[in-house]
Length: 385
Image 1 (tube, helix red, strand yellow):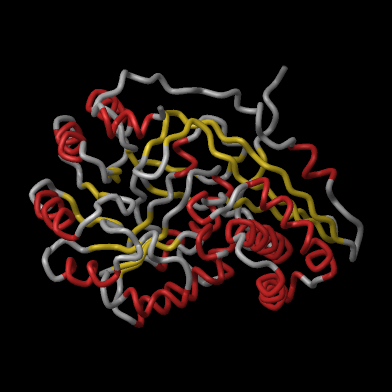
Image 2: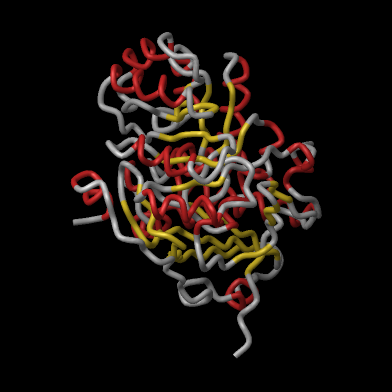
């Protein structure tokens, strides 16, 4: 029985210590990226799966895990190495191993393509590669990292954005026992805004545990956990009394008409998460939600996310940039678009114990983008022996 099932059936769990993995045990080799260089006009492409160790067992309505696998990509041309990472989402039938296999189908296209014409290159990739959105996001990030490095500018400057306008990120608290929830909240003392996972019968106990420790503003994510519009209305009306600013995906994504009804029943803003995958979804979502949560691993990359931001704005919606559990390399890609949005939940790398990368800093909930070119992230030097 996994952690989620235990919570559903018993409502309590023993205290679980943070599982700290060796920082370099599952990470990529720093020398491999440098050795992957190619001569003028030549391109090379390599990819590997990264196993990331979580600081705490991570439980949501959907799953419970101690590790997450992502895909790490190196794109090299003219001696410059672009890095990218994607976090495949199990809900959409993706995995790191399946992404590695799919990459073989499009490798010739990427090696022959011109990265300076990256939008055309990615359009061809989308035509050739069905699904595999996290892989697409990783490949595009690597190409854009290469472009930024060749131009000598960070991507936020490439897009004409001010890094000082990045909103504060939330810090996420996964579902757990009241005792462990209080522990997690105390560990997150430096973060001014918390995001609390709910969606089970233990929701009231979870929020009570949080409120016993802090009065910080809260944002809540139900991950499609409430099965009926009536239950969702009851829970949201109660959350409105608990200092919660807004909620993500209270109902299953397919329950669009029920969500339209729910929106008129409560005052709290409601954001689409699992219901918001691609650009084509946004106009319809505006009928039932107040905002959208855009994740590169769902939509396929930086450029699609940028288009979704503009379309959401045209429909009067609020916009949040979110993430999956991943290293700071994957977090850096959406972070460069963060000055364009209202909210960010870009804390995935803060939940792991073995981040192989450096360059993206977080201080008191504020993401500090590097002035280095491209994504501004590089492989962490190996620990001295």
